[in-house]
Picture 1 (cartoon, helix red, strand yellow):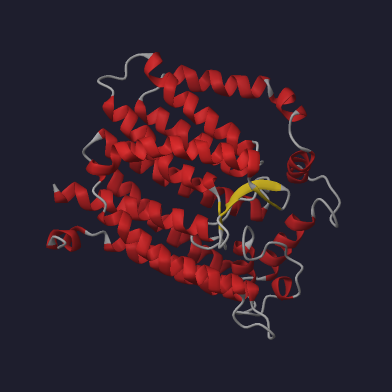
Picture 2: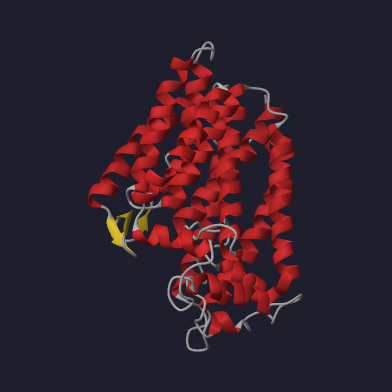
Length: 362
């Protein structure tokens, strides 16, 4: 039996915003994959399945008693590291990268699990420490973070690796790691930039050069140029649902995944794109409001870690499709096609709602 207080303290505001964003996302996955020969594409059907099952996952994570699974989540992260290692060695290759493990009936990305369980790993570790006054207490989580970063980077998946790295650094900052570490880290990155540049793959270098204005519009710059054309051609109110020419004439690559925001802007215009950004902003503000009222250190670290990867994904995706950040293949939460990513996003939001409920429940 579920206590009635669960429904009383359930965060209906964040849940409603989540459902609204999810529904709009499904509409544009439908639009970006629609054709007169195939009304309901396999991508839309899979995304619809992911959305329905994802809502179930959302409620499972809402109902979970965090006090009973915190240690289990901490230990489970070591299994994720094993999965990341297996993916690097024997993963399923798609679009030139080993990012997936095949389970015959579907494929999933272990790197997505990292977004969900790294926060609970950090939260449990720091909550178990009697004090966090010495540098040595941060060594172990920092090592785990770097191992996770390099395993994902080697797939290669620079975008997800950077999200994991920055999410982890945000949690370390909140946990109290000496600010001099972050200054030193930034200085090392700045000084070592030429060395790091030499170790980037060719396509990664091209993406950075494209951001700086270089590249052929029919080759390296093609994705970005088509994205800008789609966004700009939408004007104020857009061309109309299912009427985006850049989308329908297949000029825009990855229209149902990384560049779905370009489809939104082409078909619903500046106002439609702004509306989506406002909805995300309201969702994030609501979650931040909840975080400021959490009572325990464990809950605060967990919530900040879960929110960080969502906000970073949102900002990076919007930034890359409008040309102010390099194209790194980061999906837009709740919108871009991809079942694993959708499940992890809804699980994260479910856990955040769980934290909102528990602040009153106990």
